[in-house]
Image 1 (spheres, one colour):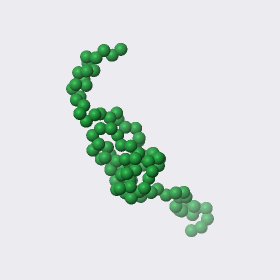
Image 2: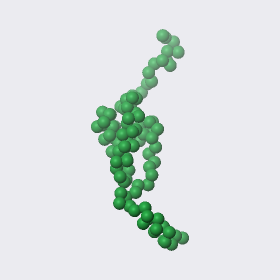
Image 3: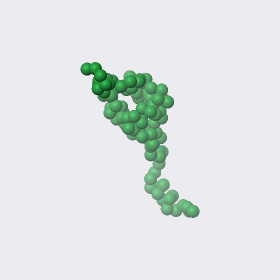
Image 4: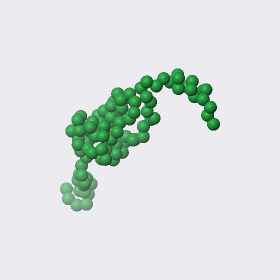
Amino acid sequence: MHGITSVYDAAGRGRKSLLAEKDIEPFKQAIVEAQQQRGGGRLTAKDIAQIAKEQFNANYTPKAIYPLMKRIGMSWVSARSQHPKADPKVMEAYKKTSLSR
């Protein structure tokens, strides 16, 4: 088909993603699992780039991970990390007894 309407049928211009469309959901799940296994702290862009390379054969630099995360709908904001040996009961007792002004 030719003409102006054929433009809508053509593939988009520009560089294509290194991460295949079919791998987006498994990639997101791998990131979540890696964060859960960590037990404290958060994943860095370097960690996520390593997951992309080892599990999905997509070679991203840590700097390129940020736009990828945005494109696939994952927020970079994470909850405050908690030390693996933290005791919630002791922390709560401290909050109740400390002077906070």
